[in-house]
Image (cartoon, rainbow, N blue to C red; front, top):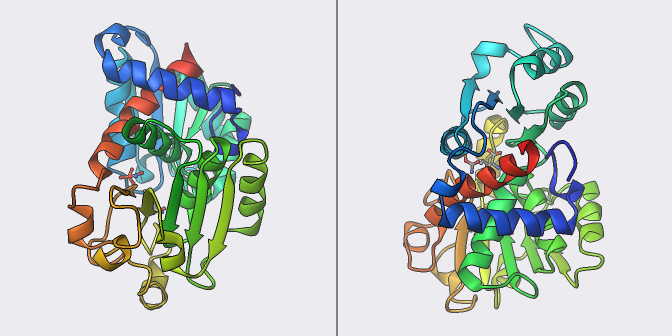
Length: 304
Ligand code: CP
Ligand code: NVA
């Protein structure tokens, strides 16, 4: 595995297999790893709010015997008070690993370039790799397999989708994406996702039709219509996404036991109804829990 985890496409399929296997181990035997990163420290440089990513990394690191420090938007002011290069070079003298949540993806790339320690992308405008790894772990845990499983994504062509489709493609899933016109995923990410699925037997289908995507899906996934940083577009987006809601009607088209997934935070009554997110098919809280187990595995892989 490379020094950093910035995007899914940088991972070998073997790295993904190892992370999933190790995640299962750390999840089933917490005490076995309780001293694994003793004396080691991670720092979380976050330019945006977070519940899951912050808490799962901090507590995950504590459970591995290490220490975590949170550096919120007003502490470091990366790129304002100090350059990304200087932040990276200095923090690498104190920390064993940096987790970064940024607006610009280039900032995560630059941190990795100038830090001598591993850098993990905790969400940028382009990618959310830790989320995608936790998601495929959750699907495997629930369905017992990944290869050949059909996953539908209904909603915004955003950072979560970018990483999810690359991860799903690498492990041989069938991916059906439905976004409103004008909110399709970035062209270069689509090209990369197709590349990721070249040898895995995966397939990728894109449309502007949520019903087409949901039909016969074994997993259905959505995310907020307005990602962090796009708040000014809220009114326009709410209009464009109206038909892209996961509701009971859409669920009728999917397989009866179809898993319902959402990275959270959810905007109930927008991209998903209460009746669906609170249904027996929903695994959103397992997904959230698995963030911590997956991230413990990632930290072990990068720091051991
Ligand atoms: N899913 C996720 O990354 O949640 P947070 O924004 O709360 O970290
Ligand atoms: N797409 C969302 C994900 C939040 C975890 C955002 O970037 O705000």
